[in-house]
Image (cartoon, rainbow, N blue to C red; front, side, top):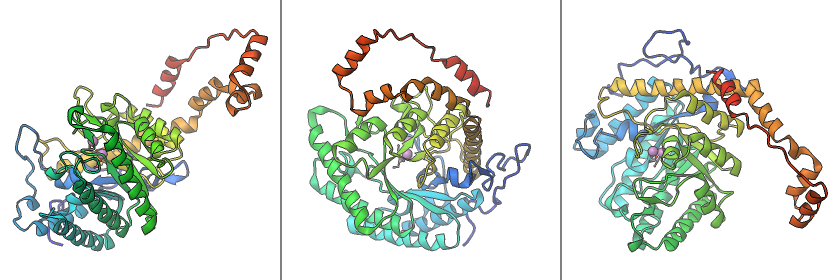
Length: 438
Ligand code: XLS
Ligand code: NI
Ligand code: NI
């Protein structure tokens, strides 16, 4: 492999919290065993190909600011190979266990379906050969069904059946490649699956199209014996005004309607939670309670802005509480912490990309360690235990088990002439308890 953008960087090492080195892990000691497993296996960090290799810094008001060597190659397939070489060199520098991609991040689209698939498979083989000599594995694959103008009115929800078919073919091949590369998950983010105005939209029909599309994906997963998870990534707005996969609760309702709640889990993103008017921890706790927590796109948004800024996570309390709920849910399993996060448009040096990931990984590791200590301490758990203790009594459990009716409950309540006394929720006491861990 010839020189890449990252050849000058050594592999970043754990140096401990007191280190002054600008590029070192202070908390991410990958082999450190916490709650019975090494940090590496709890966190399962992934680099997102689109933000870190494909993104060029353009925004709605300005031209690209990031000029990467592979971006001005006239031979697009050579550019894709150069980009892949740089990607794996970045993975080496970070010593990161996973990566993730869209089909269009790793290979240029052609003019039609056949040429697009051809490019994609050729580059998948190239990545496969690189993965032989690197430790970095594939966390998930996905298809970009939103950038090309053919998808402007949606992919699965497009009024044109040919776009549905084009999308189905694209996803089929992307699932094949994800399996070929040993990916642990296949993700569907809704992209353009939503609408701008009801004047031109039949929402009922579009939801049925989306439900059918997802059923086809699940059937195909079983047909090819893909052992990974199928994940939907909720997002409430952007690019369309009304996205069908609004948030955890909406997606769960959708999965139930189409009978897919035991087949599909969620890839939850911090910034998307914020756009939905929720917190990341809310979305995680909701998904956990439905049994559909799959993986995390660990990033942050700007609370002052209404769009998806996809910044690297840096709010310690937010990340800690998010990871606390992940631990309480039993961990991420086949999922991971994917940095669906991009450097700012002025961060034009290759070093900025390295700093961003090292900081992000270290931040999450630190948050995880704090979350683990809250779990080990047990006082937060004990407070909840105590608050709900009334439900342990047999008479209370009967009300939930189906053995009581509204009438029988009423009879008993009247016989006891109930007069429940309000009890404090103790929020400030619990907030004070949590702040002691920081
Ligand atoms: C966009 C989404 C996207 C998905 C993958 O907002 O977060 O990046 O993670 O298609
Ligand atoms: Ni996002
Ligand atoms: Ni995302």
